[in-house]
Image 1 (tube, chains in turn yellow, red):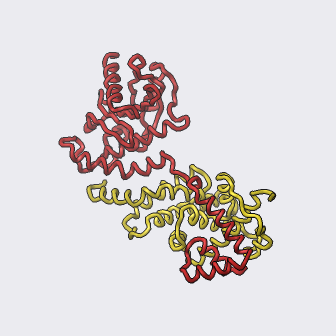
Image 2 (cartoon, chains in turn orange, red):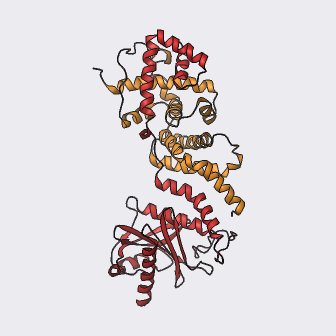
Image 3 (tube, rainbow over the protein chains, first blue to last red):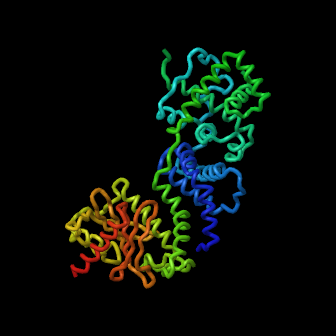
Length: 183
Length: 250
């Protein structure tokens, strides 16, 4: 088992990682959509992280953990896709949504968005297609920079920026719809 | 609005632009009502999403499981090395053996064991996990374990001594089934984990993990671990009365 050296490693891991558990769990909740799966994923994330702690080269431990969690969640997606018939995550935002750069045309300029309650906001995020939901949560809720989001998702910063722009546009449209009729 | 502008608008909102570009985008927004409205709405959205209540707090059970694996281990290990003469010593030795009989014995790291026991205790307090057999009658609880485990855990009635018998359940510690006898002290639950003792089981331990008091002792070839959030003294009292009652009843 572990000797003094292993315990030192464990202590360093704990100092680096444990403070980010809420962030890991939060992202898992938004990506997986329920508490039980999120809990499993977060635990698996910490197990993997501890196993690969030697490969962590400093930097942001939060980004590092979230990247691991993201991989765990993708494995879960794959598992769900096997049980479901066809779960192409891209199909969710294929046809019915307005194209990105036109979606704002005719947006009300006078009426300002109203605040929604937490449950309503969570529902809106849950309804976002996967790559946009992920980037919105990482930015707004996990509070990561573009660079960190790029590290977590393994995509170029440019991709992060365009997904975020599209994600926010989608969210705004859904938000307005959720407010119901203005006035 | 162009694609480029939309991205830049977001970057402005996210404070990801240098001063020069930020100025450019701000100038554009000042002259473009559509972008101004969008930026305004995005700030409302951000204000809502950034609230603490949009985050999820990791459940205590998860925190315990994740933490138990590293934290308490190490903390206890360093403390334990200060205790001279404690049987287990500091060198972790035996791996978990294949033989399932000696449950607690083969676990080389008592701290990890206690971590699991605390986790099981916490789990038992959630939902309806506390008891599989609900009875304040020791003659109901005791036979319930027969056929479910290879040992007959002692079940004694301590109601008169201030510890109400609630029932029993099977639980899993180190991936093996153990007997748990559940008592209550006022509003506090005491879980008593019972397993077959082995030759090198530590005799007596009092410790605390994650705010829970733990009392471990040996009794007639049994390895007993009591966990609760009652005080260490009360838990000691529980252990003493349990032992006394056990020895007077036979």
